[in-house]
Length: 171
Length: 105
Image (cartoon, rainbow over all chains, first blue to last red; front, top):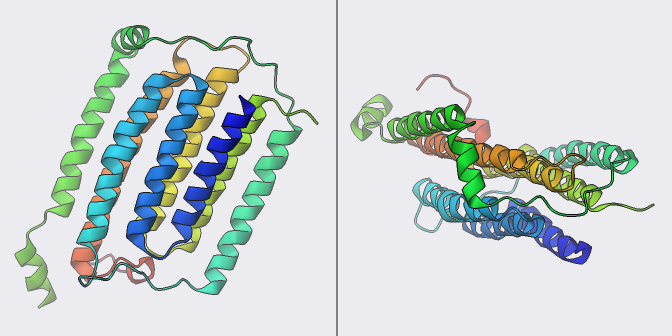
């Protein structure tokens, strides 16, 4: 059980780190898809199947496609995928800041005594999840629906401004 | 020192959070910064599931429902973020963060 968790964690962390270090944006987006699949595998390992499949549908399916479209729409020439290297000072300071946060978090987690885990995993069926979502959390579900509608309409409005206005402003 | 599975899950999620943080801080490409933020959000979701599974008083569905709502909000955030990236590209033909320093359109 711990062995499987270690493999999943190693795969997820390695692909995420390599994806954020690469200079080719398409490769980064595809490697992050692997990383998100690793997180879905973690959810499956922990026994939250519904969340795992939601993660695969939303992240591996939808968000990775949106990211790929954004990469393709914002390149400057036909084969301009590689981006210029970052400045060394910026990378070093980011590594120092991230390493400090990592050290603080690891120290806090390792030095905390956590209660013993329950022997059996909590069982959650899709039927019970649906009943919970529809009766006690119905208001939150409606709010999330409204939020998604407004956010996606706003995204369309932001991204689909008339091309003519932009060129007129530039000219 | 004996680490429980909950400890390992928390270490996993803090490492993922820090990878996202370093990526968001050191890259100057807007899309990569957004992906770093997404990784940090995913690390938070990992913590919800870890505490739901191994926590002291597991209630039946609370953690799972929290993660579902969190994923929905993250999807909305990614859509708006990438629309902003495309709109920045329209204005200055470039998505480097250093050059997006004007409020004027």
